[in-house]
Length: 205
Image (cartoon, rainbow, N blue to C red; front, side, top):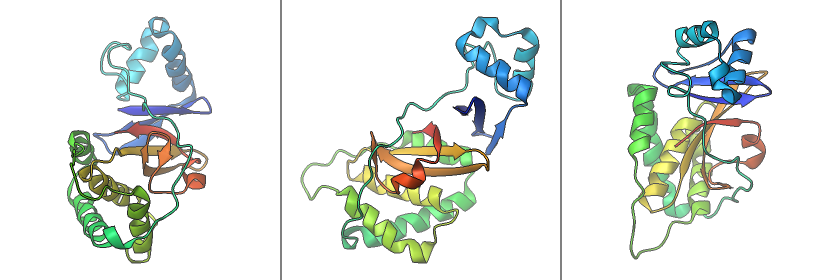
């Protein structure tokens, strides 16, 4: 379970259940109060939070996780797409297939285990070139509802080439929407800053 807070409203991502949800107003306030004063959480609120799956034990021991990532502060200009065009097409096709077959929790488990490859020699990866490759492929793969497959594919290639690449999932409210992207520290690697800034990170790997 992961969560973030947007305008005093807690938003939860149930990874095993593959769903996002918010709490009723009073329970939401009890949860927020518990963030600052866990010992002051009333038994009734604790029981209701357990019933909806937010808590699985004592508040301080079963607390949902908040992402340890800063919102990106800069993005990249797409570079020459030719070097990674084929790799990007194959990787995105592979991830689209995987998303149809695997549960969301299995996807997240696999990404938690993904390790950066330490390469010696050879031409280093230029993230702007990889970004350019994925941008070039957008007319073929589409853009709507493709952010997760695209981000997973980008991360796989980047980490195989020894590049740091965090998968970040973000949400917004009124209306609700979710989005995901790849960043390295404060640098956004595969998206536009003006779009990503609309979302608050809820999970980062």
